[in-house]
Image (cartoon, rainbow, N blue to C red):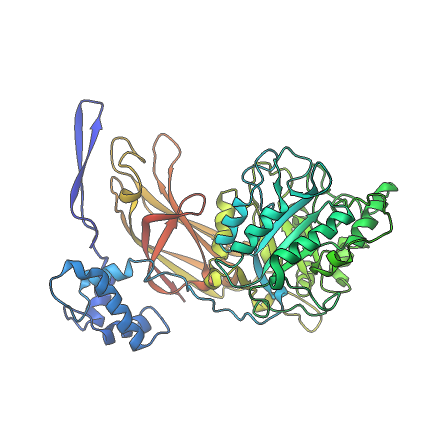
Length: 582
């Protein structure tokens, strides 16, 4: 298996060459042993034997006809290696299968969570300022990042809508910045075209609305004409119980603050009111200074009255709002404790969430059992960086909003979480986040817990870098020196780090090392895997990454495909690993 033996020459000091042999990759001992056992020491493994291996060793829920189809698929792909029709898998065929990520992924590619609970029971893949191509101050606004987000399975798109310069149409832009606008109608048409390319489950559009009532009426007409029957409009003004993702398949929902509340907020500000409900971020009594979104977020946008104070000229716009954005009238903590009168959505900045989680975390969890909570990046993240998403998820926040156009380790975690459930953009919350005890007690991520299960991770080997990178990409004078870093992220008690030894001068490193991770809350834990290339004199080079939701991990020997810094799949780079739970 693998590429044929060859050599790479590296020029040293411009005067002589160093020659490094590249060998075929060989199956590790565990794989050879499994083949020997399940083929009953034969030279080939038939469909029945493959089925037994899949059920016993890999813990797959599969049938013998499924195994027959898989065996035929493997042999079809390998047919060019043999002149003869084979009736079973050789050891090389078996290795090929186990090292093929499309045949032997560590995650289930199908939707398998219960999708019939109310939508508040799910974490939802959520974008922030979805129209920005780059930084928050001066990048272009476009429908292209919206399309990319939808193609990746994002289910909440945010649009900031403002009057154009002539005040007769609507643009999408990051207000009070130097970002160049894009027309709302262009964004809506692109959303319609791409809304369900990656997922059939509902798409939510959160509107940060800075429009006059007549332009709100124009938006209502626009979305109605463009989305038609796709647009979900609740029959009742406020919903006691929100529909499920299954009920809302292929539907588009709008979420924003109703026009009357915008008008009241505007009037209150015009009077110089500094009440907690209308100052800064209206979801926090003491809004953080310097958070440029605290006076821009969709919960407290200025809806200009345009001389029509007190009039509502866009009732059709209000009727289209499926998820009402609300505000706490008596401060955040009181709202979290008592809830809102109907199902609504609140937004908190990342700092406000941290304070709330620190001071009254159980109230946040209790609130999210019934209502929607959206978390957004602080305004000082000018370069479209992101924050630690686990705090939001640990407290039940459904919409942890990220700058999808950015990149970095926080975004890797977001992408990892939403590889769950077939990548459909909806992940069912663990049951403990939705339960209350006899005295109203709820899950507390800071409370000490016993270890529930232990994850064993074995890194066997890696390959593919020589196909995806130039021979001098990592080191000018020799092949790369790879090692693997592992991080567990989840509740504070579960955080852990480990790394393999460095394998020197090898494009196909073999580590064959095992690591053990005790977990108190495996349902919220993520396994982050990053390959680095050791550099003695400079910062270690990046060699690929992935992030896997531990609750979704398939056990057994698996092929783990790696991604680049931005989350794009590397064409060839993958690791052979084994996962076990005890």
